[in-house]
Amino acid sequence: MPDPRDDLEDARPDAPAGLFFSRRGNWFHDGERVFHRRLADLLCRSVVRDEGGSLIVTTGRDAVPFVAEDAPVIVRSVVAGADGVLLSLSDGTSAPLEGGVFLGDDGRMRVALAERRLWALLSRSAQQALEPLLVDESRLAWGARAWDVVVAAGDRRWDDAP
Image 1 (cartoon, one colour):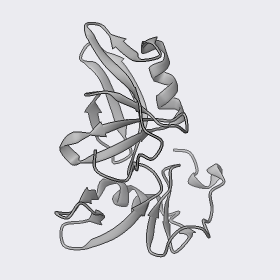
Image 2 (image 1 turned 45 degrees about the vertical axis):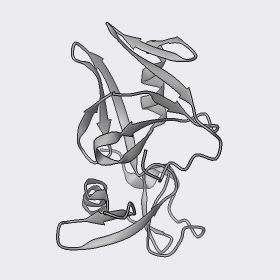
Image 3 (image 1 turned 120 degrees about the vertical axis):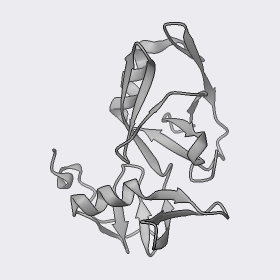
């Protein structure tokens, strides 16, 4: 496993107080990076929305609100196979690509995890893995399946529910 310190995002003095999830997939507490890998993994596995729609991390008993700089889940990798296109997520789970792929004005792609009411931001490598599936600038296809690439409005908030 790569050393999490290698990605040069050690501190975020601009981060809000409390828990913060950066668009690079790193957790911060009061601007300081959470370097403990198992704790960071636990936080990723514990992301949900509460009944009011706010983002929280919860282990079942405790619930702590957090701020996401972008989408609260990261797509780490994409694998196209016999069963379709499978997304490997930052919480350690996998999900099939369903619905469309949304292209933000920042050039980054996101997908809706509709059942969880969360957006997932594709890492650069995951986004590059989709490139062979592009039919044209507005469609992806794999086998008999096809997905739209939707250009999202510039004011779209990726930390809101899809």
